[in-house]
Image 1: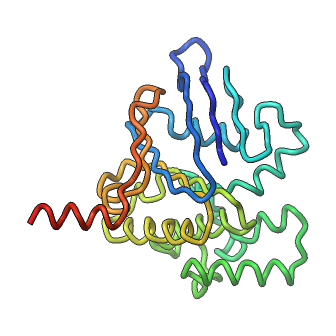
Image 2: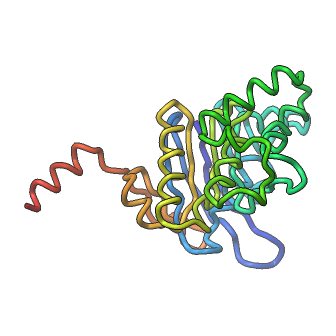
Length: 235
């Protein structure tokens, strides 16, 4: 569970980036964060991974009190929370395999075990055949899949995806959104920040709308049966 209670964040003397945010995301949920640029979506992600501290309020992830978490525990938190960054942060001089293996290298996993883990996750994400290529050799969708694979390599409980379809065409965007939905169906909590209204509409998950650093709406997604009933009524 992720719980933000009365969370505000202010940078310098400017307006609040976030103001009085109350948000609970249950284990296994899929939640869209939507809102215009500057509404606070990325700031929420940065708070969840303890890249930032709130100016006010509390943040709890399962048993972790994020605000008061000792610095030595932060790496443990970041194993629990995988992130697909908006700017991807892939290393151009490393192969796809090496990019995805990097978190394992950092925590000291043996090469044989790392290879097995990376091959497994690349296979699940659908890009195993590209593992010896470099990012520049991949399509936009393949690059996004690489970033998702790297975020999943430590088997996190939570996956944060910051505009993962932002620079992709419609078909590829839908493939990435479906991939995230499939990951969620296997038990991973997914929070996806997006501007893509079509994807939000098609997946029909919970939608949290941010506006000027505040939650403007929090809408539960409709079940598949409810959507079918609406279609029948409209005939």
